[in-house]
Image 1: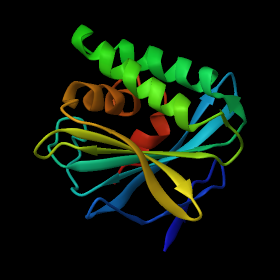
Image 2: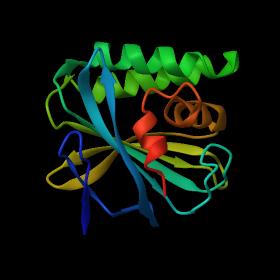
Image 3: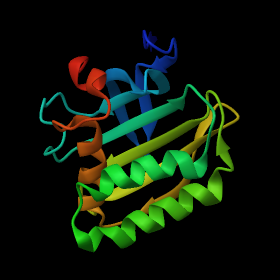
Length: 171
């Protein structure tokens, strides 16, 4: 089964299985800037806790580009948003994340996907996945990065969220 995000028309799977965890679709949404839709996204979780930022479970965000952008353009917006929310000690982790994304993506064309999995259990690991031949393939992971993961989630779920539709549609 799958769910269609109404603004972009993108189809998102109702379940993802990553790293031996099955995550259920909890919300879909989109990012707009200056009246233009930038990307569609979906949020997955192993829990149904409404406090998605402070929960200690496994979560994932799948982003699908609605417009084509350079990697620098997409990362610039993401990095600025995360920097506003993270501790100073997390900036090196954020730089490492940025470098890994640049290593694996030349650009973000229409329908390109980036999947981030946040594993708060045990060693607080952030995983990055890229679709290859219909499968999500791990392209990087970062251990002991709880503040980075929490800061990224805050970009989508706090009161300054860039994607209020994701919060509104949360079930």
